[in-house]
Image (cartoon, rainbow, N blue to C red; front, side, top):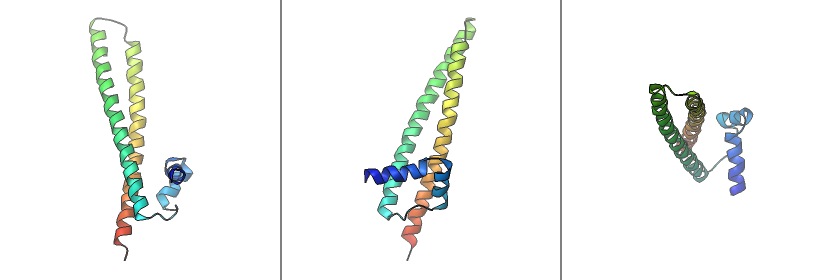
Length: 119
C-alpha cells in the first residue's frame, strides 16, 4: 500500500506532465475507499501548509516590528529587509502550493461524488 500511495502521489504532485494526467483523469481507476484515503491525506497536507503559513506570517510580523524599531533608532536594516524578502518569497511559494493542493482536493471530492451518484 505504501508503494502504491507513493506512486499515486508522484503522479499528482510531480512535474507538469504528471499534473496534466491528474487533471485529465487519466489515472488508474480508484475505489471509493482509495478516494477517501487520498482526500484525507491531501487534507492533512493542506493543514500542514496552513500551519507553515501561519508560522511564516508570525515571523513576518516580528521582522516588520523589528524593522520599524531599527529604523526609529537609525540602525542598519539590511539584514532584516533581506529576511523579510526571503519570508515573502517563501510565503508566495507556499500559497501557490496551497492553491494546487486545493485543486487536487476539489478534483478528488468531485470523483467521490461521481462515484456515489453512479447507478
